[in-house]
Length: 309
Figure 1: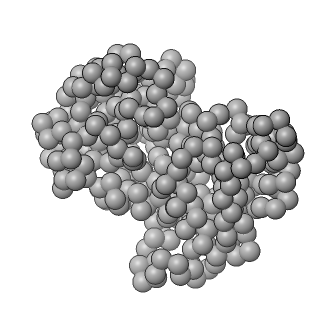
Figure 2 (figure 1 turned 45 degrees about the vertical axis):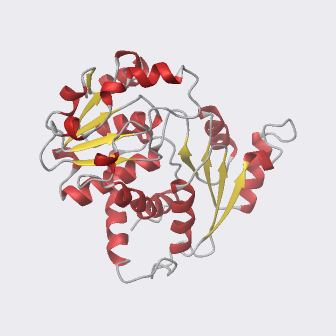
């Protein structure tokens, strides 16, 4: 039994195995329709229980479809429909019930500590579907997409992030250490990655490049990543933050400083941080990126069950 919580804690060789398996599984599905089951039906009879404390579209859809294609089933819960966190039932007791009914648990939460608490009491694997400090399933899928499009290992590419320092960036930074690729980050001074994240990179003998000038960050980049800068949960003055990120908008002019063959990726949902011209343009691969979540989630599930081929 293996958990999938944070890329920092998973060996690089295991992350590479997941990607290799996902590539094989996607290739073998070329002639299959959406709900046809993979021929080996590796998770027949298995149940994934999903719980969401935060809104979800791609993560919810991709895990649901992933389990169906692996011959398993899913049950989706919302925490506000349960006794959890309302004084009615402890995480320990909830975890026992989840472990009794299901074979694996995927949790999207507003608390890193809750994931750790569930991990402590569950007797089945747990997958982090997003937490305040990490979005590992998204970023591993993004690496899959980058290698699929660029037709080379991400190790040999220059990767750029333009935007806020958030859970997706934290996982991308962890990935830059695990996969040894160059990562340049463009953001305002007050929105740089926290000291704890930078110290972890340094401790692992790697380096990330942080620029407060978006042109320098994007210069020569093969892949440009971004995420929504202004979110509903922002506790800062949104108008002030919008002004601070104004020159970091990814438009045709900014993207011209990247490599001629560069691509643009965005984990969605999007906001004003990217122009329609770029988001809907020839360099954008956001729809392929979103669909690839299914293939990688399947291999993550198999990794947790110890069934990677």
